Length: 198
Image 1 (cartoon, rainbow, N blue to C red):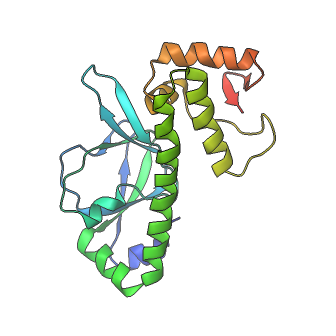
Image 2: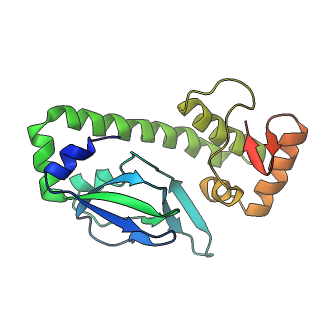
């Protein structure tokens, strides 16, 4: 977790439950809270003009999200939607700022987390210049595998659905399905009971 839950609750945080598919916040709404996931998975996304969804990230238990908006006077440029049933710890913006000012090590924790996410963005944004779907998927899946510390071949169960991989890479679901089948034939990944292992 980014900030100790007990510390957040001792400063007035509240726990709020969201059902799968429910919006936590919508694009163009005003940021009012520090948000940290106690349990569940959230997707940060935008909807493109053709109706397709583009996923910016999929944080889960222990992660915070959209925390950079605490330091801006701007509205959200993304949506946050519960992928699974979620419990989200919410602390008002003024209270989290006060907590950070009183505990400078927490600023380092948040900055380190944000820096890691930016590193991921830099790596994955390069994939948009690649036309080859296999190269795009390989880059995303291997980065996530390395993030979790897996090294052995086929040891990491990819935590994304094929639709989520499509939304993360800006490709169509059909393209992702075809590419995954090719990657299996090329022994780049393994499929076991429809789960992808890399």
